[in-house]
Amino acid sequence: MNPHRLVDTTLFYSPTSGGVRRYLTAKHAWLAVQPGWHHTLLVPGAIQRLEPGGLSTLSGLPVPGSFNYRLPLNPRRWARLLDALEPDLIETGDAFHPAWAALRVARRRGIPCVAFFHSNLPRIVARRFGGRPTERLAGRYLRWLYERFDVVFAPSRLMVEFLEDLGVSHTVHQPLGVDEAVFHPCRRGSWLRARLGLDAGARVLVYAGRFTGEKNVPVLLRAFARLGRPYHLLMIGGGREGRLAANVTLLPYRRDSVELAQWLASGDALVHAGTRETFGLVILEAMACARPVIAARAGAVPELLDERSGLLTEPGDDADLAAAIAALYERDLDALGGHARARVLQQFTWRKIFQRQLAVYRALLTGGIDAPVEEELAEAG
Image (cartoon, rainbow, N blue to C red; front, side, top):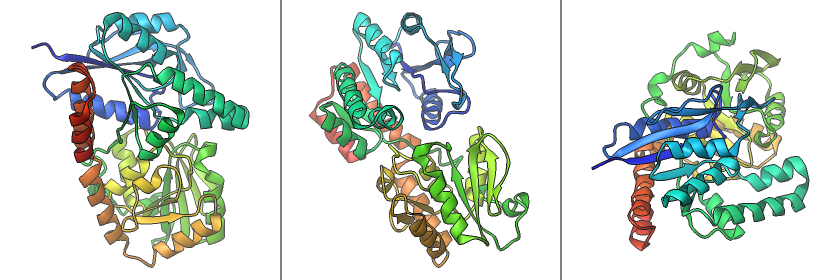
């Protein structure tokens, strides 16, 4: 029997991009050892390259000010390369011209096509280009686009509800996951304070991610300004290394997952002030390293974090965040971290996540999503 040929395609992929890239890379590695599947990625790159079963790329112009994203400008070329990979099933990870190319190819070939709602497009557009009227217009666009797909995956229940409120009915809750062998407590080391030039009594909390508006970085900085020494914030994800303040250190993005895991595991906790997370993958990665998390009670974060794994704070409130950080050190950090890792192992390993997703794929390839599949997913989730 020939393997099912699955193609994932998206604009949101670069050598230094975040959660979407980690999802696709983990998925590709996992499917490589699953019988009956042949998986190809089709994403932007420096050159055009067709590599069935591997990483295929379309050449595109660099996007200034982004995480090394590139933008191929020819939708027809995207569709031609997608068609040349002879897919049996296509998944698209954005709502732009790759999505329309995927739909065009799927319709021509008579195959299923699914979308993954990784980013809240209406809110991003509203924040950058004009407020509520623009947000409503983007919402109507999403409904118009997504009604053409067989299934729309959403990484959190919050995003499922958001899509359903827009009028997108064929949604499936599909969380992301963690490689529990990479993000593991064994990555923890005693080197971190010396590496940062701090004394042994420093209380080091880590932030890892983009330094964009929705991450509320100023809230973090104000909280640590309130705290002062011995509290120290290590921020991973900018473009340079150095001290931003007396108790704030910057480090560039860590492309290698093992290196990121070492930094996360070696801090006392992860701290995160973002209020618009559609999922929050770095929170799970820190939890898998057996580190507690302090994060804003907003977005999809409360779906990941419970009171035995860390603390939730008032969104946008640097005083409450500072108080929570101080309160964390009155608790048993290792016990909180142990509960955090146990929660990840129970619900959020890539194996569990992809088994759930493959149940949807198989249903689509054999005729569509039905009640038994929905019940199976409910039991799995």
